Length: 436
Ligand SMILES: Cc1cc2nc3c(=O)[nH]c(=O)nc-3n(C[C@H](O)[C@H](O)[C@H](O)COP(=O)(O)O)c2cc1C
Image (tube, rainbow, N blue to C red; front, top):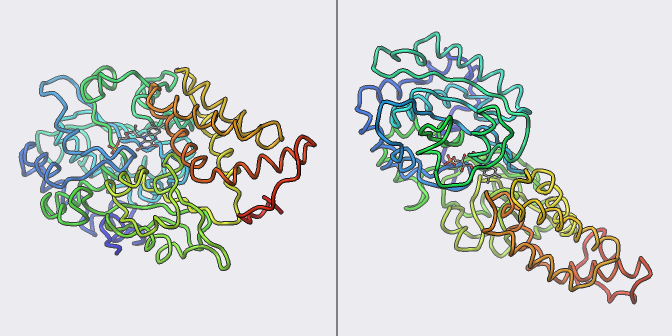
């Protein structure tokens, strides 16, 4: 089931230009929104049930409603850091349809009564940043940004800010610090950004895809949008599929579509002769799922009930040619590198996890080390300033728990190679590079 809303005309030549975007009906939702009161626009967002597409899945309309009333400066920040491994959907949206994002931001700013807005884009997205900058200039020129937009009471500035490529700057409060010109470190919450965000002012932060959906909600009406998908996961979702599949890419699916359809029908499934061993349903931070989970509906609640999460909507498929320990080590190294070091459980926990996994490779470890690895993950979870630590601990803990036998086999073989143990029993699982 793949209904197209965001990607309906994504490959239309020239869509990144204002001319083509307007020809395809672009900015008509903004005109419509400006004829409504702020409250009506907000009500449409609430009715739509739209949940944040950046990771946590929090209801967008509710978050916008948390901003206090008053005449102080209020901010709208678009999170275009797209730093979660496996996630590359925002890139395509910004590159091909930058005005969809800008239109969504102006409408969202109207609903939240924000007067200043920013797009924080990861440093590596140079092309997308250049395209956005050109689009912002066009939108300003055409009166969609700036003072008294389209003759209305709404005034909104929009500044594009390029980051320097740090995972932590995708975390909303780390992003705000970075945007303020400081080192990107997460802040203690509460206060939440809605009350005290950028420059201590009320701030609404949303992901690119979340904001790009807003014009479509206004076009369709919130209640109609809510009819798509499932009751608790409304609408469509852009899913980035990568890893061991034949046709990786971004696909727009209706929330609730079985994961098998996404991986096999849209992304071509595993390569001939290969089988899926496990898959990350929501980026590298999500606990891994197994082949028997492939028939689960791809939506926020179903994946949470299965012990994982939809996260940023990035499916990473791992087939039977890949040793699970390689994935675990690569992942732990990434999070260790990206940990900002501000809080101890994350700084030390990611570092220790890498060291312990490396011991598994050198033959210094025994199966008891697996218990220690698992316990370190337990101690990281829920104890960090932000969830970067959990983002390693959750998938890592799930890999050790689900593939304990393979980890033990690996330890035995490494010990034997290092002259520290008896020859291992023949492997039950035949993985290329492991046990053969
Ligand atoms: C370590 C870390 C990295 C994150 N990276 C991103 C990111 O790159 N893009 C994003 O939209 N959200 C990211 N998030 C989630 C944001 O903190 C925040 O929840 C999101 O921007 C809110 O937007 P949404 O409600 O529209 O999803 C990250 C969170 C954490 C803890």
